[in-house]
Image (cartoon, rainbow, N blue to C red):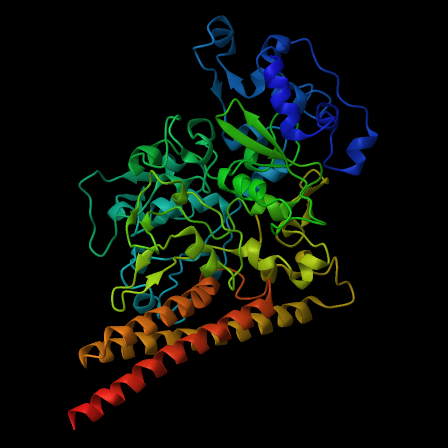
Length: 537
């Protein structure tokens, strides 16, 4: 007991047991008397779970019985080896927070919400198949639809397990929301539809759902029901809900929090220099639950960090070592890693980490497959410097059917609701003007993305021609290095979902740097081919 208290106090800082007992989400909450604990037998739970007591007592949830979220507690109290059942589905929270619950499962019936492939003319990355040649994303890479669909859209993809998982009833149920296995069906392990990949891994699923929280040890190390090396289909079958409330809200005390293991590791390992620090400090107090999981609790809501649990570039794949090409497999902790670096820093970071994702099928360049780096893109931007957080633009305050205001959890695209997202801070502007400004920035950035793609494609084609002509390996190696550099600076922006709006200056700097790197590679190859041509005369 004493050991647990010392670990908890050390993790959270001096006086933390008192500090965390206070509701801290709003100023209004602090002015109200804290709810009194009820005599429901929780004292018995607290004998082993003092970290829970520190979070719960004095909070908005203090009056809630442990049985609100946990079943089979009586059996557990009689025999601690029999674990209680923890209810992780949204309906538990939706009982009291109905407006938030309903908005989370709201379907966005707009053109951007429908299934939209990136790698086609008119898509975000029309040259994707050439530029990502050799990677599973070339089989299908669709635009995101929203949190309510994040699990089913991952599983019902042509790149995930050969298309094994499909919508029940076909496309008619594409807009259905709720539990995964009420929406999808398993076509069986022998399913392999044409033009599909067998991609998918357990680490990636950690961003899509909260269902694995109690089954996944910190960083996916051995010791939980599932780990980084687990069979991907076994893990998939255990996922029945999309991202849950407990990802960002502590269920014991309602404090804002993060649970994504690699984010906690990244923040802890670089407290003064990470993208969330202010004055060298980060408002994240880490609680270690008996060496199995960690959570990070905040005094005040910081949605930049809460959203960064998923909206970041992260590695979840096996790959190779930059230094010697040796494989990096899922037993290696580098397959669950958050760099927290922007477009201009990310390549150097992965070289230092000694990791790359895959080799390009034509040039053999060692490439990084970027994910969705919204948080590190936003860091240092004009809006970030002004103190604007993610929820203010993407989760604006609305009025529910009961007349009460609430933070919408449908997670909007601001360009689709400029009135709610922008005019609170820009009251002198019209909705039409702000939308025009947003589209101007996005169209400018997309122009640079197309040019970066063109020159990357040119570099790949020129490489193939130079190889056919017998250009020396030393020259080809120089071109591959330029390909590696240009690729990261381009793909970062097709993976990032704002089309440059989160940080227009960074977008321009890195995309034009991509173009320059590709041009330099093309020149090296063309010069070598001219020499070869002269030699044949």
